[in-house]
Image (cartoon, rainbow, N blue to C red; front, side, top):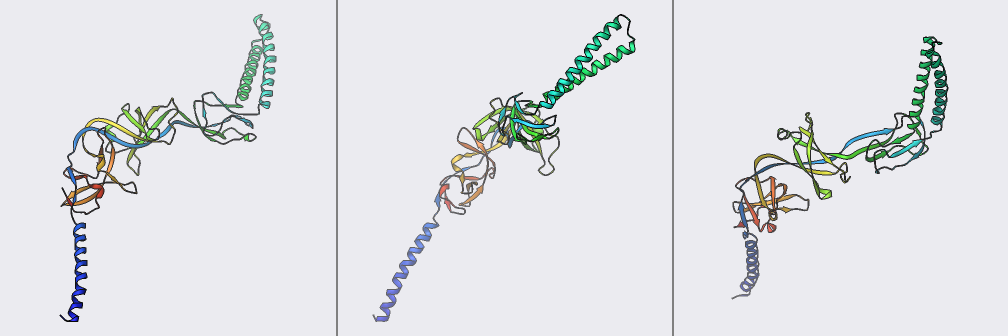
Length: 341
């Protein structure tokens, strides 16, 4: 064998070995992944409507003084819980105290004059016209006292009900005027869970119907009843605002908290349940599953409604009857991998 032939063989052997390794790796990469599947078969379960919502205050009101004056004291801060009748702030009462004393003195004088004239009238010694004038003067003086007393009382601003001070617009030393808001107050002894209900579901709801309201941040749930169904749909979303009234004696429910409403309609609906471990969640917090089709894995995004006591999840959308769901081996899959089951 000549030298050139030997060199050619030496070059071919490593190349053949490299090609063999490459083919083995490719074959291994394309080898079907062993999985277990379960065919999707919807079950009939009680119909439950799920809707996200938020907590709203029972009432929101802007509070202000009915009289003008310089703010003397402010007794509450923004975010503070207050009770009904609690003193919130006051303006300087001196001018109103003096006006009340003047009105009281004038009323005493007029009342004394009326008493003497009434005795004369009873004896027939006073004309009826003079008696009526004296009586009218006394009534005017009494009205002036009541007005002065009210203005003096209005120098103090009280909470009309129990709730939360959500905004404070005055400070000590500032000037207050009638109609100028001093505080914004939320009534929270009762609250509403408000949710937008789809047009297709609104006919299934009626006022007084019991609803379960879940508050995730408190890890708690409450039962309430539908109090208000707005008959006017939102022009953009075509949803109807529904409010569920909730007791809030514990004051734990705060306006703005997120909720989930569960409405048991009394009807039945087909429901798709899958094992919780069949669901995969990616880095963007998107939930999906894998189904087997033509011996390949197909990634499908799913929307979930909740978890059952049997560690199964309710699928709202993304799967349909007949899909072959991969329930084992899905963590090793990518979209389009060959699978064997």
